[in-house]
Length: 194
Image 1: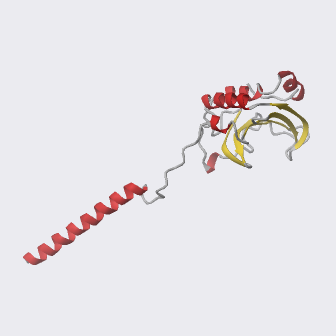
Image 2 (image 1 turned 90 degrees about the horizontal axis):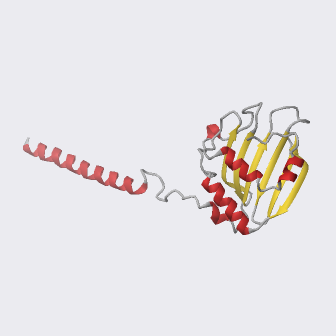
Image 3 (image 1 turned 90 degrees about the vertical axis):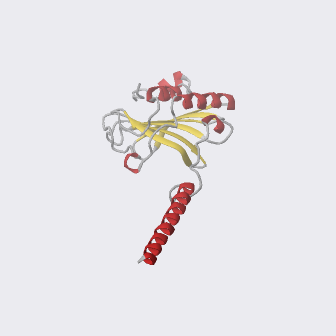
């Protein structure tokens, strides 16, 4: 009987030691996940000397294809571009490009960073603005490099979306990268939001 107690106590002790090692090992590897830490997003200004492009897309109310308009403002270290799109298939009806420089782009990126341009929640349930807020605008905020988004969030005029930054001020910053006379001329009759 005493021998059985020693065997049981030994098994329990061995089990506790194994459990402790498992818990310690899981703690060092993130609970069974990859031991590689999650990448820390780089500061926006670190993209000032790269080919990364900051972009705002303003997609207008959901109306007939011939009446639908979208406005895309794209800013890089070399240029700022304004495109006006007709319909849902991306037909460019007006476009204007302006020279830019690295110092201007760095300042712009810093301003975006201070207004929360990289803040939001990217989940599969709220990653697509298509069809939301049919009477208002949908806004897509993106930083793209090598044809892929580094940052991409959206909001709409009805208060929805996954973008957590300062919506009006970020839109204003993009609009200010285009000479105002050209912006007003090319977007006449299109609501850009407040």
